[in-house]
Length: 154
Image 1 (cartoon, rainbow, N blue to C red):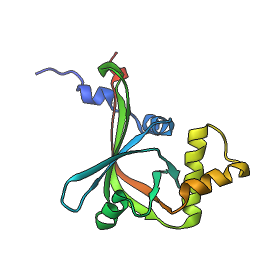
Image 2: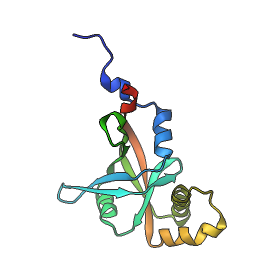
Image 3: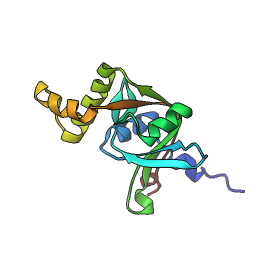
Image 4: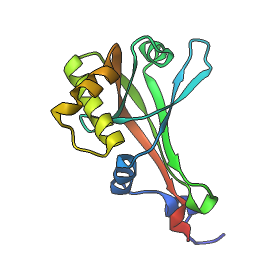
């Protein structure tokens, strides 16, 4: 038996590294449970609401129907084109469906800032309002993070 460090421990990211990675511009894959037990998996742009990862979606979307029935959600953000460059974070938790217009607008600002690379100004209000029309926010209350950064192996 070897006394070396497990590879899993080498590639695990610190809470600060996880936060920095999630703040970067990525697409998030989100999984919810369908009524028949199958998994509904979609790729979404995301922002933050009250410090937690969040997304906006149509109020009548399949993921919202699933989350009203069962709030469990698992999301993953990842990047890398080769094994030695794989970096990712899995988030397991519960979803809060947000219907309050002010909180949805707050989350919308986060997404617009992230997609535009600019600080929000009132000139952006029409774009945010159009994006969140007839939509809800889904705030992800993360219970567990699983992370990997294969660049640490080199």
